[in-house]
Image 1 (cartoon, rainbow, N blue to C red):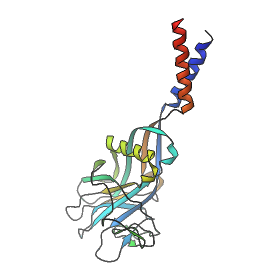
Image 2: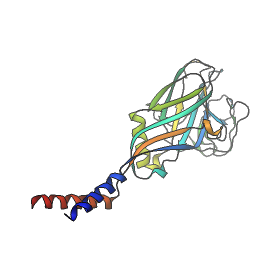
Image 3: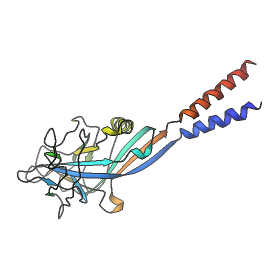
Image 4: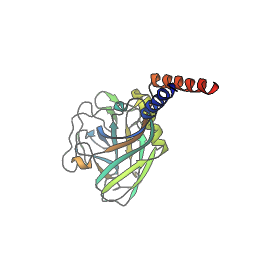
Length: 242
């Protein structure tokens, strides 16, 4: 009889450790890759990022990154990227989310005006041809990213949009498990025609419009708790044999 409370307490300890939780993460870096016929352009400190083509049929691709390290060792149940569109003159079109395969920089460019034209790239900026302007080129102009989309959203008028699904969930888990390979994501809009670009708010926009990554997760039980649970189970089995 005295063993039962111990086993119950240990089971409750491990059950509590594995309880599901939700974290809403803010982005820690962003940028836009601006295709250009002239000087290299960037926008690592602006209030917006873009995806799609401008009126001259030149592409814009958004970059965004979140800090997943603070979650610790967890099992990701689901993940949802939430972005706010603050300007959308084009008809609704699909914007896809891709995992970036190479590290990239922010630099110090804060593009003027509506930011659709970018600003002069500074040292370390992510540009159409460089992961770090002046230092490290992309292997492929337009960014090094997985061509297979993790998620897609039909983006239309001003408002909030979400990207989610099993592939995105798996990608977040992989980034947590191997943080050295976490280079964030690239947003790719409709690049088949001119004037398709969407403007998303960045981490420097008004607080209520900033990007969010919502992660539903369970904490992995500590090895000691798992061992204790095993001992508790053993106690229970020995008691049943008596």
